[in-house]
Image (cartoon, rainbow, N blue to C red; front, side, top):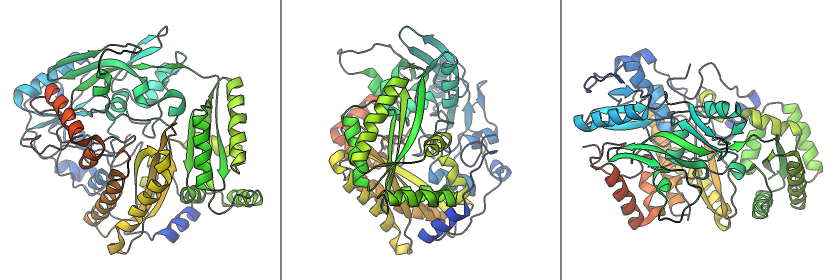
Length: 536
């Protein structure tokens, strides 16, 4: 059963080793363990629905609770405390494009706000209802979850937009193919949500980001149905796909998604290498990607993240032996863990491995135990569960990310981490902060930062801490020649900082396109772009 007030399957939890908790406590003392509210109590506080009756809409209070929030830290605090503030008035579960069209028509006729809902994994407020004079309908895409066509000649697959990651891969793998899109939210997030938020998967070096995979599909909007054809390339004006990619439900609801798939690889493996410094590790991966050595993944943890990962891994004796071995090889304090993946045929993987290791060795790299790569693959989607068990120890955990050019990476990373460390100075709190480069490009890379801070004496105080950190980090990014979001999208939380990237003219163009598709402002108001008149 999916957790109603947190991440993932409620039958699964991660355990933090005693040594790992001691390490965190040495960095930042835990706060007060705050009491969780009971689901039954939240259900009792759900108001009566304002929606007219419709056969496709449920106004069941528990269903409305389960569709009221995403997975941002403010969402987490709202769910654990029970202070949701706003609930959708109902949730619809369409099973076809025609039913989505029917629901949109119903909403237009009755002046109802519409929120598209995929897997509910948003960490930026994409699916949260705002206070509104209008009734609010959340349209859940969960029943549109099947592979409906696979063109093996063109290698294009068509899925219902609500298909979650595991079902995408299971249905393709049964036919010998893969999409290869593996965001950390893969367990719950959906293919339509990936398109709507321009997401990136962990193996984007081989398969590309979602924009390289998205070939076409069907969008239901208040202005009509948009059918995007699957054409391999075109010079016929602006690409309509690009209008929908990252549109976050503001221009319409994706009902089906056509994606470019790949035959399953003969071989796949992941490896760990330790570099003596962050600059060495950064230079090594930049050289690999600029030399275009075929790899499926490159990830660099900076020194604080490397130490944190080793401490949280448990197995203290084995880690101790590893530390001694690395020290003998000249990789000591300040070392950085680099994880890489090879996916393809055996011959190509062997050649890529030799080329990569040759570069790593030039930068002082030492190969880690084979088991580290195996364990990374096993645990790659489990990080979100870390929030659950650390919460029970008095810690709040959150992340933010960006992307920038190579010449700006180190400086921006340091400024981002510095902004988090200083954000709570007046509270006499210094969060524990660490970073990795999660996606590597010829031009630059993404920078993904995690921070841990103590919960406050109350939910309101904890939220106040988060707001200070979020504002400080976002402002640093916005003035840093970087994107406000590389893979999490904009939603509500990042909307105030979007203009720094797009400029006034670009923002005007985005607003004009939204106005064309949704002139009455019914679709997901307040998301992507700020507009105080959206919900009125």
